[in-house]
Length: 113
Image 1 (cartoon, rainbow, N blue to C red):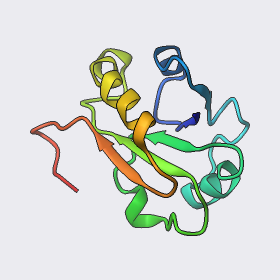
Image 2 (image 1 turned 120 degrees about the vertical axis):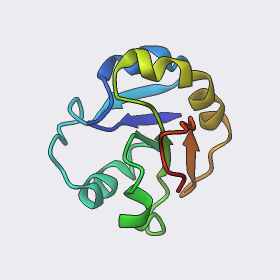
Image 3 (image 1 turned 180 degrees about the vertical axis):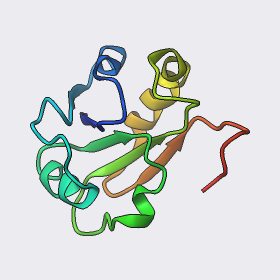
Image 4 (image 1 turned 30 degrees about the vertical axis):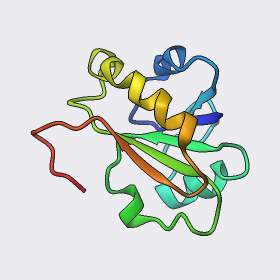
């Protein structure tokens, strides 16, 4: 799976997603792009956007392209808060379909979408 790591995730998260081709938004030269523009740029090159932005599917339509989104619900974007969610991320990457949104990691301090 070709995975784009959003700006709100650490680049070294890619090391924990074996078997997938991962690049960060910054590595792709898209730092600072708004979500709609980012999705348009990423759609032909990536299968999945991995992000912490839980509002993205409500702000952007995923119907015009094929990119899917995995929203990670973590306490923070620090690697130690993200690592426990890697098994869920890997499982989501195995089953996700085009234009689908999957949420991983549920914290009692976060509101459900």
